[in-house]
Amino acid sequence: MTVPFIPFEEGQQGLDWIALTEAIARGHDRPEAQVEDVFIRRGDDTLLNRSAWIDGMGIAVKACTICPGNPAQGRPLVHGAVNLFDDATGVLEAILDFHLVTKWKTAGDSLLAARRLARPDSRTILIVGAGTVGRSLIEAYSAGFPEASFLVWNRTATRAADLASEFPHVRVAEDLPAAVAEADIVSCATMSSAPVLKGEWLKSGQHVDLIGAYRPDMREADDEVLRRGRLFVDARATTIGHIGEIAIPIAEGTITADDILADFRNPSAFCRNSESEITIFKNGGGAHLDLMVSRYILEVWNARWSGGS
Image 1 (cartoon, one colour):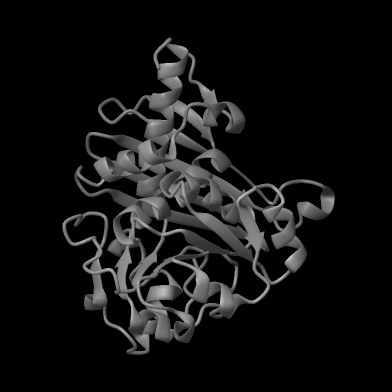
Image 2 (image 1 turned 90 degrees about the vertical axis):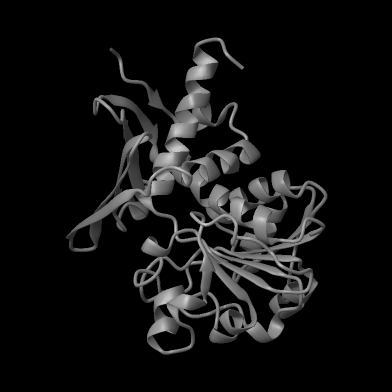
């Protein structure tokens, strides 16, 4: 049997952001994933393997190389693929482009949270950070909040202008505090290690989506953000003790683990209780989400090639 390779552009055909969030939600109804990350380093270069096994869904092994010297030689910084295996037999079912899975996982994770936590009447969405993830967030949030317009802010204003020029409903924010005050949803996707978002800027009824801080030493939001809002994460197991956005304020006594009200495995508690409260979501990613998203992509791919819808 020939194992399909699903490339980026072809793999995106037929994918739907809302259907993806529903697939992620269904994935969390299954038994809890077994997850393991392995890092191998050689100087500045890194090999990362992220693996997950969900009983009844299968196995995903997401492998990528990060070589900082590549861009200077005209090569991409990151290369990788996701191997998807059958749950019962362990047979390799598909190999998926790394960037395809990462794009839809990252933005889909945040969109699922926003569909549950943000006010449905949210009309202004601020994207902090004008990189690749920022572009994906505009696509995803446009599907979930089709009447919304967008602001984009970036430390380098020209990058924000470049991103805004790609979408008719996006404009550049020149002043970050003013943009936060205007927004109903604030989504941070930066590479900052120090907080860029301050709690004193927030207003009642907002939803805050924190994506960028993925290492133990990184944060995008200051302590006041966490104090002012009701806090949620995608998975306790992959955020508490692993990601600085959560681990640092817990270690310093700003919050406790009990201040995290729910993750996706507890949907009844993962909700907004009032129009005025501020909700905070930490998008931690994790290999279990790579598995759920890869499975969704493969199902759409198979339906296309078998003549289905």
